[in-house]
Amino acid sequence: MNWTLLGIWIGALLTLCIYSFLYKDNPFYKFAEHVYVGISAGYLLAQDYWVQLRPNLFLPLWNDYAQGQVHFGFIPAHWYLFIPGILGLLVFTIFIPKVSWMFRYTLAFTVGVFSGLAITAELSARVLPQIGGTLRPLLELQNGHVSPWETFCNLFLVVGVLATLIYFFFSKEHKGFIGAGAKLGVWYLMVAFGAAFGYTVMARISLLIGRMQFLLGDWLHLMR
Image 1 (cartoon, rainbow, N blue to C red):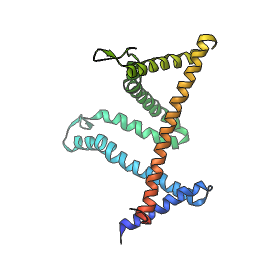
Image 2: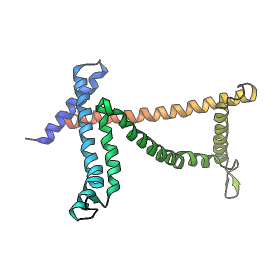
Image 3: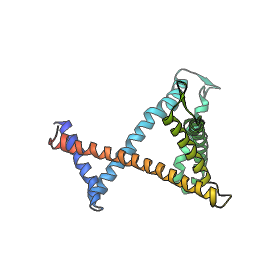
Image 4: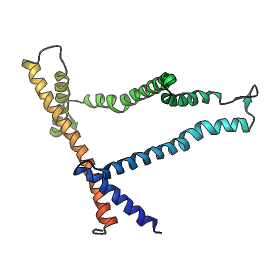
C-alpha cells in the first residue's frame, strides 16, 4: 500500500470537510473538527508523557529505587518530585464532585507560577524595549549633520507615544489641547490596530495558499 498517497487523500478530504463550513455547518465539518481535536489531544498527551513526565518524574524516581539511593529505606533521593506529581494528580479530582475542590490547589499554583514567569518575560521582551525605543534624540545626527528622515521618524514616534498616553488620561475632560492630543492618539491607535489586523490576515492568507497548493499540487497534480 502506498502510505504517502493514502495520507495525501486523507489530508485532502479532511481539508475539504473543513472548508465545507464556508457553506454552512454540516456533519462533514463536525467530523473533521472532532478528528482534529482528538488527534491533537492524543498527540499532546503522548508528548507530555515522553517529554515531561517520563524524564522529569518517573525516570529519576525509578533510578533512585533501582540504584538504592533512598533514605530510611523508602524515601528516594529525589523525594521533592512527589510534590509536582501530587499536584498533577489533583487535576483529576475535578471528575469527582465530592473532592473536586482540591483541583483549586493545582490551579492556583499553576496560575501563580506562570503569572510570575509571564510578567517578567513580558517586561523584558516587550515593555522595557518599547520604553527604551521611545528614548530617542529629537535630532538624529549622521556624520555630524542632521538626518531629516531619521529626525522625522523620531519626532513621529515621540508624538505618537505622547498622544496615545493623552488618550488614556481620563483625569481631565478631553477638550482643548488634551482633546486634540487624544484625537491624534486615536489615529495612532487605529493605524496600529489596522497594521496588526493586516498582519493577521496575511498570516491566514498564507495558510490558505499553503492548503491550495496542497490540494492543487500534491493531490490533483494541477500545478507544480
